[in-house]
Each structure stands twice: as C-alpha cells, then as structure tokens.
Length: 353
Image 1 (cartoon, rainbow, N blue to C red):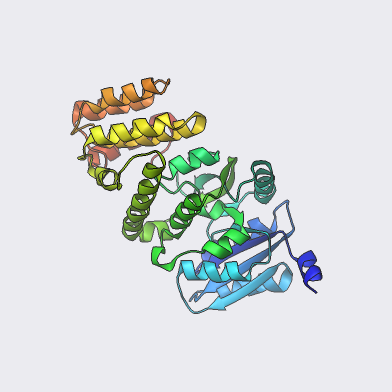
Image 2: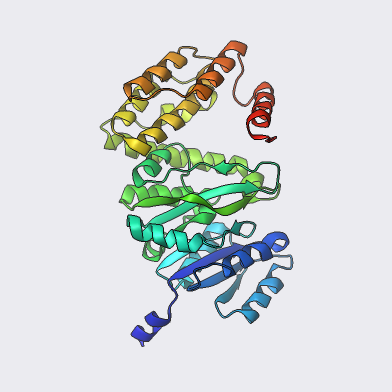
C-alpha cells in the first residue's frame, strides 16, 4: 500500500493560500494549471475568505483532479501555509500567491535547476506588473551569493520558491514571524546548512497593487525583518571570526552609525567572498553608503577603497548618486530624493516609480 501510494504521488505539491483573492485569483490558478510540467497537485487553501473565493476554487476542483480545496476559519498566513505543507504529498513544494502569474515553464526550469545544483530551495527572478513599474527585480543565483544577500534582505521572492518537502515539513513557518515568515525560514535554513539557488530567468510576474499584504502591513513587516536580520548578522559575523551582535548594522537606517565599523565589516565579508558572493556584498553595502553620505561625506572614498581592495571598480552610476546626494545634502527617503528617483527612472527606464 505504501509503495502504490508513493507511486501515485505527484512530484510537486503547489500550495496556494487564499484570503479574499477573488479579483486576481483565476489568473493565478490558470497560470499553474497551464505549466509545461504537469506532474503536480494544486492545494488551494482558503483562510476564511468573505468574498467569492471559495465558490471559485470549488469550481476548479470540480473540473481538474489535480486540484484539492481546503477550507478553514481565518488563522493567518504562517498557520495556513503549514497546514498546506502538512497535506502535501510531493517531493517538492512550490509556493504561489493569489495575485501573481507563473510563466508556463516555471516548474520545468526550477526542477532542472534543483537537479543541476543540488539545492534544497530554489527561487526565480520576478518582473513587476500592474502599474507603470515593470522592473525585473534583481536576485543572485549561487548559494554563496544568496547567503550574503540574506544579510541585507530576504533573498528569494516567496511566491517563486520551490523547496524540499522534507525541509518544509521539519522547519515550518513560524507564526510569530507572520508578515516576514519566509525571511525567517530562509535564515533558519541557511544556519542549518541547506543549499539555495535562483533560476536566472523571470518565471513569475509579481503584481503590484494597493491591497497586497506587503503594502498594507509594511511597518509590522519592517520590525520583524530587523529582528531576523540581527540574528543572521550575529551568525554570519561569527562565521568570519568577528565578535559582533548586529546592533550597529540595524541602526544604519538613518545613516548615523559608525561607518568605520560598517566599512571594516564589509571589508572582512568581501575578503571571505568571491565571484557573485563578492558582488552581493559590495552592491548591498553600497546602499548603506548612499544612506550615510550626507552625514558622513568620507564614505565615498571608503567605498571606492573597498572596491579597489576587492579588485573591482565602483560603478559610475553609484558614484554619481553618491556625489549628487552629498552635493545637494539630500537624504534617502526625503521628498527631494523621491523626486530625483522618479526623474532618474523616467530618463533611464521610462518609468515613474
């Protein structure tokens, strides 16, 4: 019986949590059912929706045997994801969100990447849509670079992820990190030695709209992100032999922290990195120099020296931004900066952000 059950199990279990997703839900579901790789089950779990979402997904269940519908009272995203993970029968679990669109070859390309790299967790590039912002969001591809990128932000676009079911069932999402539950999971995976990859292709269209969770609950998400970052910085600093608790990094938001301390840390991280991982350290580090330049004009020379020691040259665009911010005493986050940013993207990308 066990053998037959395993034989019948799909290779991939797609988990799609739903809460009042009616407006865009059909597009999301259709994009999964249209995948070139077809050996999957689609678990649609309704988290107490009050719109027509449940009726809609039951229609899909009636028409396609791969679709299973689960309903529950509203319990929040982390709890909902864990319950879907528990029901999954596949070797791999693929995430999907109710308002995004997976491109047809997403699963095919991710399975190829997982096989080639031996990774446990795999994301993809995403492209924004739904507004004038059509940017392709940058991601690093190698395990080493992703783990360096993780110091600064969540390195994977959550709705693109395909991960080992055995990993997901053991480590699970933590309810206390709801809103940043994915970042918390990746940090725990990195600390436990699991391997990451990103397919270097756009395989998901990420919808931008005013009611998405990341927009509505942004402040709470930021507070949790800072907490997760601090724990990961402490772990990574220990790995490179530095006694550092992450406090100085966390305080860099306003550009008022000791940039000598931050520069020394980046230099140490750069010395421990190569290739794409080195690029991740320098590119992410440059953002904090941009934040600090109005209060610490010497950071321009510090950043140039850091690149030079790493055998690289600071790119002209970043150097220009540093000099403009310094010259006009413009702080990142200010109204003036937002105006300049809009003009910049209008000139270079034809976008208003």
